[in-house]
Image 1: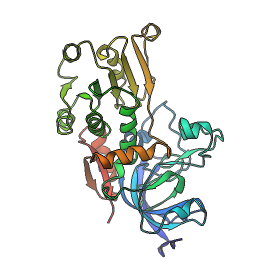
Image 2: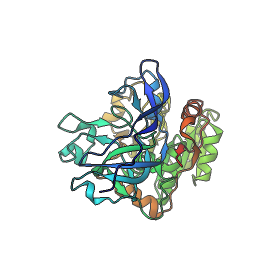
Image 3: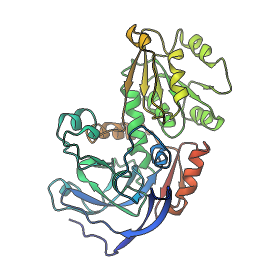
Image 4: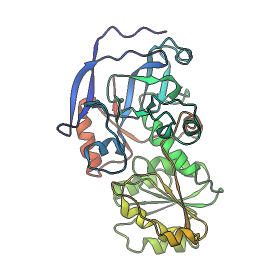
Length: 355
């Protein structure tokens, strides 16, 4: 059991619902409980759902503690461990990645097969939202949610794998397509640029769709076979139908745009096409019931992972050398990162790298 650092406080970027702003606060250094590890954060990256805290939304983001340290996507090194058996699997200095559900049982059907959000205890909280997250110098992590990084993954650059990576991997893998199938990735930014890499590694023909030239360029850099700017090219849907011989076998939507979901049915192959829901718009989605009833397309969802499906995604990333494209910032620059994301001026992922 490693010892808790001697310092008593640390810096953390905290969201305060009273003024809807971020504050760089000095807060107490947390101590791990028996089932937890204390992690010195090496890298914490920004996810679109972090930014949703500042927006009105009706999609179920629940803020508990206030103010709360934001961020749910990070990697680091173990600084100390709790006294319990699960925490004893880690040693001081281990490079680790982790995901953010806490206070759930990890053992019920929902925790093992669906998502911890539906744990039968009803007590689950998500770090970065209901409890303190990772834009801080240290964080306590439930040891059941953590894993030692493969040797090829650097904790100073691998944070995006532990939300964006796991989410993108399962968004593609859960389509369950045959190699050689046509797959459209809608939104080629923070999630999509990784989804393209996973899809190519799985042997699919990949079409990248976005509305900014920066994201289109990122899609090309990540190996997309074809790219379309759906805002600039009014014929893009027809071109995709012609290119694929009737439509894609799956359209994976990583965006928070309701319109992009509305446009999905037009590019999927009738009778074979799947619309994979990953990105979460502010407004509820609408699909035509007759289309679904008559089998024009299917709808499926994929989430940001659990401790049970995290490891395959990370090991696949290491094996196929899939890397997040990340621009590094300092902790005090987190407001600038949020501004860039809101302005759609982001290529890849934005992350805070700690010394």
